[in-house]
Length: 281
Image (tube, rainbow, N blue to C red):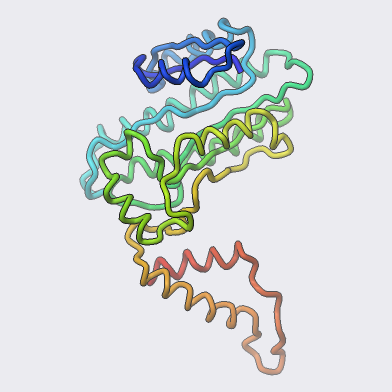
């Protein structure tokens, strides 16, 4: 791909991304813009098309973290609007502007067109010390499905990628806490997710390796299985024990006269019951 990178300010990380991750025959342009400023959405969308004449893939990866973690009862409108403005409002209206132009262009033969939105494991993992962030990351999931309905007839696919605990500057302030959670069994594979893990997932989607799918979410993570950040190892052990009880209860009819074996739970159903029992453990 030829790239057009947009960030609030050009920085060393952006320079490295351009220099180290671009194939020699490809081009890259950097634009400084704040997507929370929706008045810039149309000029920004126009810049994308003016640079290369067409856009085959939009990756929504811009976002901000909360300034202060704390009680959700203390969240102010200003704090809420700051996070929602970038992570949801700005993302939606930029996607809208680019989608309009993608519908106007004639796609090149054999080119897969897509919109990939990066959300977060906090789309389902509730953390009450940063509610505005969790809300801002859940909403893009529905946004992805809505754009799938609108753009699907034109052959434009939409995807949501949900990373887990990613080692970035955003997670640096809570690195010690995350290290303890990982060591305590938060993830089946005991390591951090890395930016390269997310990039590999996005590359797979952008290059059309999942062209038969749209409006779907893909989890780019080593496997966060806890729905609450404070679920302990003992809680998960209790959940595993309850799994066995649930398997017995759900596979056997409660009426002795009709009692017969039922189809065992699938792995997905078992994980769902594990989530429920972990919550109440």
